[in-house]
Image 1 (cartoon, helix red, strand yellow):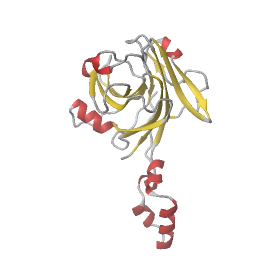
Image 2: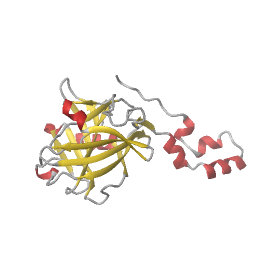
Image 3: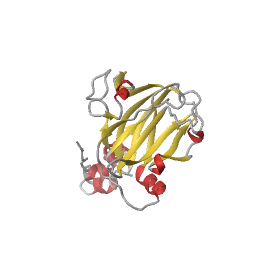
Length: 237
């Protein structure tokens, strides 16, 4: 089922001008001091998934995998009150995806958190050993049997901002993080999906996203890969 996201309130989408429209000067100063524009911008984001409704220790019920074996790779876990999707792949390469639509014009920014736990031994996405400890996809419709996607990966070896392709060009890959620094540590990721889609697919179109997906894989290296994915949000610029 598609979930169409609602637009944020005008006050959440902007700061100074809207506050000034209805408050006296002294109140304006107090409000802006207490609630900076950055905080209001954060409030304008919409949560796609935070795993709060999924049972701990299980595959999230509103996600799908192409192969049943994938349900053993991805499980919802909780740590210090924080829910996340844990992935551990033993010689497997199976995506997990959630079907969710949003307005890419209003919300071009995709934000999430991730944590690498174990890099697939010998992986090198540039030279054919195409396994990644962490990968996030923005997914778009293409045909009855195929989709387009922009894929963001954390590679142990390939430099940041390297551009790769797969699936005969239907998957455009951007190396967002590189190296083992940050192992076992949470970090935030923020990408402009609309800009990346237009650049990599050489178009001015505004596509209609149909979902997000993740992939922690180790099938090309026949090794073990492990990592975690936190909440996913979409935001205005």
